[in-house]
Length: 455
Image (cartoon, rainbow, N blue to C red; front, side, top):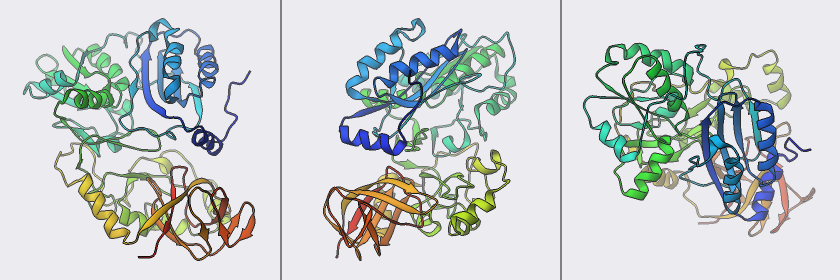
């Protein structure tokens, strides 16, 4: 019986595009006592694989945490697979503000020690004894109460691009670091203050609220469904948003805009910006904020060292990585001396720019020519630095100028000097052709191929 993925991300993306069906990106969690997480995992995989549901899911003895992409026409059937379990009957599914059919391209269900790593080894701690849930308007009302302390239980790279007004934003890289820090900070307010907390979808606050009740805090409250559900409610009910900026999300989009306010800066030049990217150096992959201009100049890298590295041959890059210890040294989230404008902790809500205005200005400055969409990225062969695209509209010829554009890749202009069309050299590619050509930078499945037109 199939209990694993049989398709690559590229193959899955192609099938999704061919199907032409809308997909929903959603998340949910539940704390419960699961006796056999391995069997629970296998049963879920069988049920969800049959529905073409994809995502990243963690299960443990303490419950389930899921971020998923589900075909819209299978949504009811998907919910039925949850209703089989008593602890997930009527569970709230947080549907994303912005939809992307490629948000997840594999079904990955892993058994973990805990669904949210907390660093706690206290058997008397009851995770189900949680704080009071508040809906959007109730949360706003409590924010206005001077007797309230509000805490952001997300990581520094999440809160930097968006957070609630007046929130404490710990400079931490993971949830378990924040618990002792906030506990020490608020020792004098256990009895007389409202402790109000929030996170992306509610799962971290569910545990945090129970932890602070266990620590003796009397008035503990949490935002029901996190920022995702808050956003849905304020839009449906016409409530003013007290969340400023962008909500960081853990799929390839890396963010959903809640308000037009940009409150963070490009980590390299200081320009107002809240777009995250991963360093293009495969030995780094640092997550940081980078504006379009720096993205073009630095070719998606975080430092001069990484920029020089990506222009070495693949064999030289591999040689440099030999013996390199991965982990925090390689994959730290936005913590690097190379980032001169990185801000963390106790952030202000000062608006540096408005998203719509900033994006329009960037596009006009960067792209002063007309373009037309002709295709999409399908694969990137990193060893040979070859990009593969599918031509969906118009022709492409040797000598044409093209723009490759995507949320992580940015806007990259190149001139076609040589192309393979359906596996053979050719001067021209037509609609339906699969083409490959050499590129010095990585392309992603979300990238689009535009032909630049003469002015």
